[in-house]
Amino acid sequence: MSDFEKFFSKKESELSERFIEEGYIITKVENISMLNAIQEFVSRCAASHLNQELNEPVDFLNSAHRFLKIEQLNALRLHVIEAVNSEDWFRAGYFNLAQNLLETIVGNELVMQAKVGLSIQLPQDDSSLLPVHADVWSGDSPFEVVVWLPLVDCFGTKTMFLLPPGPTRDLHARFKEFEHDTSEHIYKSIESQLSWIKIDYGEVLIFNQNLPHGNRINDEPESRWSMNCRFKSVFSPYRDKKLGEFFKPITLRAASRIGLKYQYPEIR
Image (cartoon, rainbow, N blue to C red; front, side):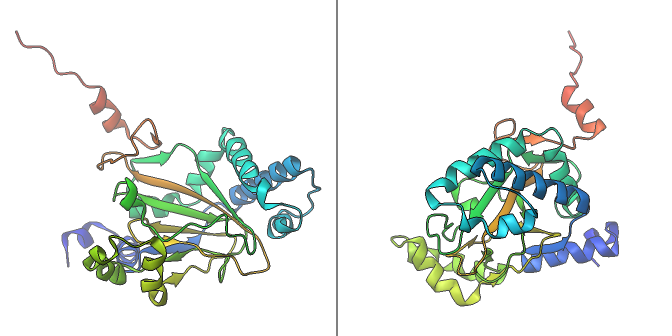
């Protein structure tokens, strides 16, 4: 038994090992009422922006491609992102959806991305693709995780893919081979090893953003709407995305707040 296991509960140890070995965890959201409120707010905001009637939020989101043109997509996405992040309740509500799991995987003194992101992927739309990448390759801290929240059921190509830790280590070992290649060459070399994340509305995904991930053209007959937000331990190392700029503290404990403000007395 390792020292870590001595201090963790059995459940914490199991979740930690799962995250390390598989690179992600899917679980039920911890507050379904909050999830429903987020889904409804996003749906109403989008419907208003597009001058569409809203009946059932899930039907509206799944069928968005019927009335949403690709050239309208980015303006709508930015409008909804701005609106939902402006709500006082939203960021705390988003955190509460996965709070216990975050505290197990990351810690209980956390920073949160200042603005939660939104992805909309219409069927057959090649303008919203996220080529294979790992966030840490482009300036993110390796201590970050992503909380990925589907606002509709996500499956098949209406979801994201993730390369498991073992194949990621193999890819890193031969990474120099791709020095002059595109991300598509990398994708083709790992395609058979990818995990395609099947996740239903009412569930939330936390994944290791050090692992290559992305999406492909959505070949399903429904639109995908998902939200994403990075979290990390407040005292873990930062890279390009800095505290106070990209990240904001959300759960700084009393002793840490006291310590950060403490000034040693001058001795003359």
